[in-house]
Image (tube, rainbow, N blue to C red; front, side, top):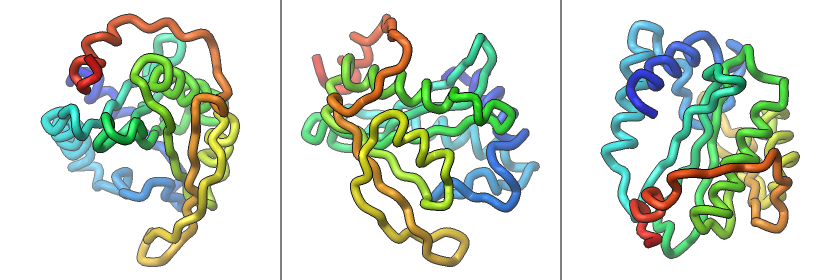
Length: 190
């Protein structure tokens, strides 16, 4: 994501990602006060860029639907060359939710990770009281892999932990990929 895209994503997120009485994220970044929101959003992503290395990296991708910016889909991994795994995360602007976009963007990223970057498994998690996120994981083919208690708003809540392998992935539309070789080199696969 270039800086212009990051600014547009910050504006999209500021317009709303979830209801006021909800918190679907372990890190409550959407609660950042409006006067600091854009700056902190940009600083976070600049930091992710600056820390990118073959041993520990996050790949956050901007998602467009019919040309319109709708959110992000990404994966974070540590010790990838040894583990061949990472955890997916995403968000959609509120006005784009409930249309199946989240499922397709997750299917697309997972197919790319398995087919082009050598992932052997992918994890994800969702608070038990977040049915939309849980449904996306299940539709994509993730299998429940345990439940953890995690802190949220000064209390403990259940988080469903999911695992996806190439044989359980429910594939979406056909994927055309260009430019994967430089990424493979950057993460130590070449």
